[in-house]
Length: 493
Image (cartoon, rainbow, N blue to C red):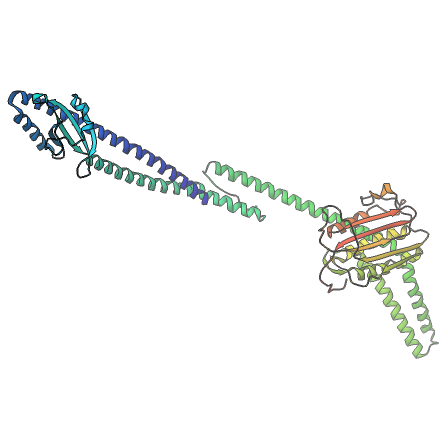
């Protein structure tokens, strides 16, 4: 609507300028024409009276000649006609009203006209028509006509032009406003409302602007664009959902693969309590135990059963596929639980897992199972990198780091989970490819090359990154950086 008002203002202003200029030109032209007509009429009048005066002067005398001038004054009182002697001194009734210095041409026999102010200060038009009087004394007929007539004509023309200009401005302004609102304002308001809905993601409801020329074409193009955007959004949503589903499936398969590695270690972890349960159960069944010993044996069986149940529950929790949910997580507690889950596999490989105790809590906002999967992948790789046994050190806490360009806020605090092993290490040529999907240096059946790629994707989704340092024959050092949660963790991992 504002654009329509601006257009109306511009149109009305243009019309006003044109009418004002035309009115000024017309007024000036009309005044000039009126003045020209007045001059012509006075010349005709003066020439006629001069001819009559000269004829009467020569035939019947000066008195009768001057009577012609007196009779002429009776015809139009606004025009004053006098006989003047050009050499009459000031104050003489027959002295000219115009200064003598301007009457030299009249003395020489020429007709002269002047615009001068009379004794009342009124502008008048004076015309002098030379006549040779008695004894060749220079005389003339003076015709005076006030210019008030021109002023009246000019005022009338001015009032007429102003009234006409005002009427035209009013009519054109109303017409421009109505047409601007209908043809421009309302259609543009509909276009703006449509664009606002598009900005909020609402592509429904076509924009209909019938009979508005280019605006109709704009509406058709906008509708086509919205349809294409809606189709593109649906396609992107479908592809994103498919990608997320595939990614979750890969992560789940990676968890199942890790679970398979843990299975052999769990056999030993579960075998020991099962043997204890079997032994105590046999002793109870033999009936050789006292009532107190039977009760103690039952308590032992219950404790070992709970140990088995807790182990199986941790395995099931890790293997279960469920939607991600980010909550404040204490990384120290999470890593400790994960290392407990890895302990049987590490013992089977003759590897010792150690968690460096930094003292304070390290809280991040993350998905518990996804971060657990990352720690399991890194720890499993560290254990497999030491077939002859060794030490794996896991540390948690703040650390100096050099983030990748554009991947983190330099002013934000981060928490580092580092996994250091004493294994075979990674060559420099393979170090740049370890996060690529399906890249692996392990033998057939030992890995798919997805573990580190999935771990790197999980950490990147959490706003962090993974760095690695490795030396052949000395081991590798993986560092996982996650943005720190400023609030204290209020929930257990």
